[in-house]
Image 1 (cartoon, rainbow over the protein chains, first blue to last red):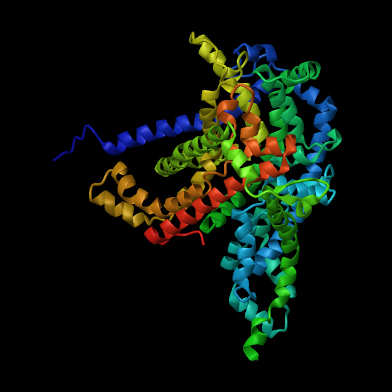
Image 2 (cartoon, rainbow over the protein chains, first blue to last red; image 1 turned 60 degrees about the horizontal axis):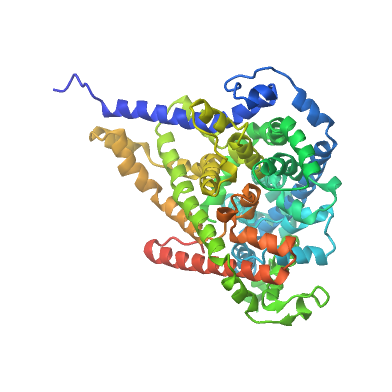
Length: 297
Length: 299
């Protein structure tokens, strides 16, 4: 007869859980929100801690500065080119290979799969890879950023898993009876049915290249060829690193610090913009891709 | 004769594999062949194949170098910290997020993987912005509370917390996706039965949700353990500065500095090989143990 229940554990749980998740929500969102409001506020007010919840001293000077900064603009252009070329090449290599590996009747399928999976766990490393790029005289060219990484074995396995799960044997058998070759089958039947995996691959690869800086940093010397992330690294990190202890050439450090002070929030927004715009549209593919990838690594 | 013909019938599929095979041979297997310079006295003139052998000289030099233990210790400390924090947090997040059952659940899930789209450079740039000595938000707030400014980015003891904390912030939502999917596969009837039997929500998390996630968690744990020495240099390198080097110098950044900045190709390749081999052995052991214990394995 406990009709009048003073204490309902489920209700308590719901309240505690909602509060907890609300805190998580704020922790995830606030840093992004702060960068956004700081980018359109008066830097002096930001630096003295007056901007916390809403922009103050609203202005777009920081964005104006970015639009007139040749290094950033050029980096942006390079990043767009590298990302486009790299993604097209990578997808064109990965998807057909993934399909071939998914076919149970591929001769020596086990060996072929092992050939790829092995390099996922055992790599030559930084210096031997650098020496290969050097040997091929790719140093300081766009191709040094593009060719060494234009196949991700992880993405290849995601593709293979996708095709294994979606292509029906009956369809293949029917096509065979009609005398369709394997290549024709792939390009004219399998590929048109696989728009989802192509979208997932474009997404995975494009994010990776847009956000990468390390290969460009080690393989490129000419400033004009730097992608956005390398330019940003110099502005955002090098300049501030110097203020927290490391040393460098005083004059260029001072110049860099001035730029950094101006654009340290707006450049974050500008650099992340393509991904943020893309994000709502590709979200469902993104989740689907992670799911396929995690079935079997 | 007939079986042989059948076996080779689909050889044309290899046409689809050719570009991928060429890429892997040139940019993955060729560098693996280049590992031999770890045992050689590399000279640019003689090339990789022509340089003379020196046996284990570089390895011995590395083991005897004054910062061997520091670099190895830093690598292990960072890996373990990542394992302890960045592994269970997405799991807990998924468990509790799954229980929201309101519109807020969808919103929070979508927001939670937004940070994954941010680049490493931007993430570390944000760290410098938020934690800088004079104008960083964190120090400004601490200042209002009467606490003296801390040089977070230039303090060795702050390196691991900042690295791990920002990693959790960036990847929690992404890593939770797979758990959330596994939870959505649990049949609603089980929850209903538990509720009729008088189980509270918290009890059904303990006795239904957690057991449902264990197999997934185990596989992910194996993968993590097998990667334990494989902390990438991208983010560490950006967070490094002269002041926090004593805890931020790990094997992969050490290899980069020696190899490409000081052009000690042979020595740094040896250091890297040491790392790769330990990692590979770990992976094989972990995989074998898990196969015996639970039937789960990577290959």
